[in-house]
Every structure is written in C-alpha cells, then in structure tokens.
Length: 421
Image 1 (cartoon, helix red, strand yellow):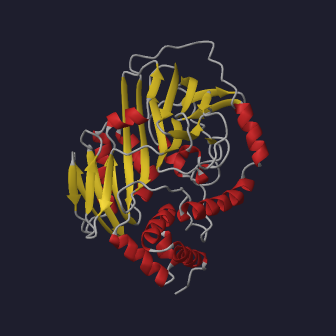
Image 2 (image 1 turned 30 degrees about the vertical axis):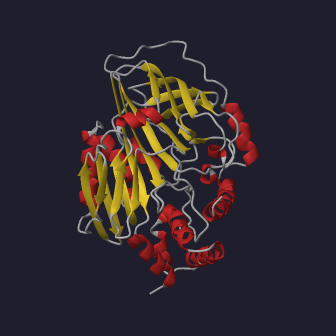
C-alpha cells in the first residue's frame, strides 16, 4: 500500500470516529442494517406502466490521473475542511449505507457519485429496478432496497480482493403522480436536496419500518473499473488525451481554475489521440456552467434535470485545479452499469459526466507555494483532492522518509489557525 493510502486511511478513520456519535453507535447500525435487509413484499395490487412511462438518469464518475496517465487510488475525505481531520460525505442521515467500513476508507480508483433516476408517468404505476456496478460496489442508496449484494461487511481493501460485481434491487416501487411531496430532510445542509428540483413523478417504497418517499432513486458506488479515456500531463502542461472507448467521447471540456481566473475549451467528439493545450484563463463560471447545461440537455436530460445536476455538482466541478470534464459514452455506461427497469419505459435516457482530475505543473507550483507561505486557505481550495494530488507529487519526487516529512509539513499548515490581516 502506498504512503498516501496508509496516511489517508488513518485520517479517514479519525474522521469516522469523530462523525459516528452524531449518528448511531456501530452496534445499533449493524442491528438496523440486519433488520432492514428483510425483503419488501410486493404490493397486492399491481398496476401496469402507462404507455407514456419515461425514465431519465444522471450521474458522475470521478477519478484522478497520475503522472503516467494511470488512475490512482484515492479516498473521498476532504482533509482540508477541518484543519486536516476531514469532513463527512455530503449526504443526509436518512440515506442508507452498506455494512462494515464507511465509504471514506473503501479504497478504489473510480467514485460513482450521486446517480439519480427520475420517473415520469401520468398514472400510478408499480415498477422494479435493478442495477449492478462492474468491478465495484454500491455503497449508498435511498429509498430502502429490497436487496443489495454483497450482503456481508466490506473491508477497506475489498475491491482488491476477489469479488462479484456489487448490485442493488428495488422490487416494488410505486410511482404516484398525486403523492404529496413531504420528502425527508435533515436540519443540516446537503447537496443531495438539489436533485429534487424537477417535475419528476414522486416515488414511494414500503419498508419494514414504514413508507419512504422521494423524488428519485438514488445510489452511489466505488470501483476499480477502467475509464473510457486516459490523460497524461506533459512537462509543458499540455494534456495527452487517449480515447479508449472505441467510439467518440460525445464532448470533452478542458478546464482550469486559478483563484478567480477560469479557463476552458470544449472539444467535440474526440475519437483517438489528441494533445490539448492548457486553456487561457479568460472565461467565467457562468459561461462554462451555461455551456455544460446545454450539453446535458442535448444528451437527453430535461432542462430542469440538467439544472438540478449543475446545482448538485457545479461547485465542485469548477473548483481550484485542472481537470477534464466529459460526457461519458452511453454504450460505456450501459456496459459497466447495467440497468433493468420493469416494465420497460418507452424512453430511457442515461447521461453521465466524467471528471478526471489532473496534476499539472501549475497545480504543483500552486500547492508548493501555498505550503512554503503557510497559506492553509489556498490549500483547502483543492478540497478532497488535495491529499491524492499531493501524494502523487511527493511520491514521484521524494524518498519515503522525505515524503513523510512533507506530509507532516502539509498537515501542520492545514491545522494552523487562519491568520488575520
């Protein structure tokens, strides 16, 4: 295991210990998980799907490219948020989780974040849904599932052990156009709620503890699957792009942010190999957001769905650093994330956005300068990507002992109280 993995696991474990008392004791979580695993019985009255039954899905695949262009292992703990300790996944407490280790210490290379499935029908309808994740596990979901596999606890290295693909199923979901929209909500803020800002048909699931209502099906996961593209940062800062999908990437955005300066350019349907120069930082957040929202609608989302997706993830897609933001080919989505809905909708749109974080010379220079000047605020702009980026930097250039010292120096800068002007 790399220095980064060991250190990140330690920080993530500390964050989980700090987080757990605000929710439930582990023993009680295990007991509840066992109780909720009971299969939900089918409704006694089956209603067949209306001929206009439609389903739309959006989601994201997030990964980080190492110096050689290969995906690196990373963990979704924002170690900059609490002076180096870590922050929690931005999900409400009612969202259900897999058993065993928290997702924050489940090692993997690709994070599938916030897929949601919307349904549209004019008549009350009962449906079933099943989805699996190639070389991965489903880690969070809502409403309550009928079954999730694997059903046993997962250890932090479970994805690197022999395992079957993870999957989740809902055997009886009621689509109810007239259902009141009294959906659950915690007191705290969460990006989860933005996905409700659509005209989708509300859904209802009967569980052993009562009815659960929502505006969509939600699930997340972690995997070691290969992406449909790769990117390697050249010494000049240009990006060597390689299409591995066997079909065009619908759209790719080369994005860079340095403080308040934004740069991006859009490549339409890159098919093979290409070299993209770093964009000039002359754009605005509003312009890139507007362009991406238009791209999502062109791929099959309704305008309010595209807006909800940008409201959910726009702040992180456009944060400090360099990355590729791309529309994932539909064929790739279907191959690694097979989805079955019964009865079959007359229309099914699946629009996924990929985010591939890049460690560019500009990023390295920025982080080194922030450490040298003890500027914790500048470091924290990289959020949950700070530690994997920093790890890629030091493990390429330094021996283990020196890398340890640099990690300690980084931790000290993050832990220091902010200076006042």
